[in-house]
Figure 1: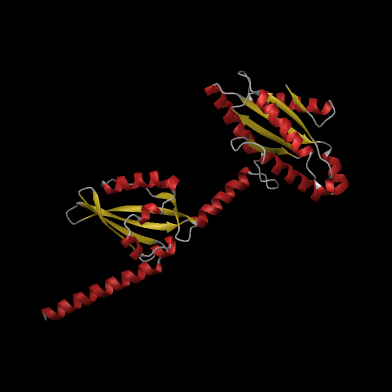
Figure 2 (figure 1 turned 90 degrees about the vertical axis):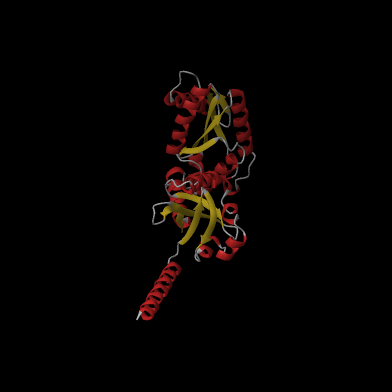
Length: 305
């Protein structure tokens, strides 16, 4: 009778383990288990679904215990190490979203959720974790941010985001006593381009101008479309002489460019430098005055106020 009970218990255990294995295989996320002794990791087991998310099999993780760390995106390694150090010491840690390099070379976003594990005596013995692939969600989030911040035609910053940057840069200039310049320009006689060639050609001109300017400014400069054919460039850590030289360079690049059907296109530019008592409104008003001065003096020129 005891043998029968024992056999039954073993059968139930096998059935339970089999059911658990099938459940793990059905889940698209993957589970890993870390065993900890005396504050040190002594073993890590990766569930079978790791290959779906990372491209690597459990056997490959066994062969190279450092593989998981090696595949973490470089800029995210410190955050991952901080999370790991907490849970290894038996302290709860919130989930972490970070990037990994998939075996195929692509960058994937994952959500890593660790849960502390204790034995029957309440002693910390390690933790289990759930790795979820959140790449698609991150791509959607990034697209939503892009839609909120970028001009849909030219793919540069829109008016609202540009003004947000303006406020931030003014605060930075005040705090660190650094120079800050503002360039504003618009396309000369742009209405004629639309009237003569149609709005499709006009849109193409806007895109080409945005591309030309973007290729001739620094990565730290903020470039945005302020509305219609009007654009702005925030030039940080640059006094008026440097920003005027940049404006002349941009003007020359556009004037010498062949715009196909539209022919020759020119721009008028206003330039100003931030003053200690400036608000964003006074800063914008002054560069706007400089722009209209350039128009009044014949267009296709740079004026400084």
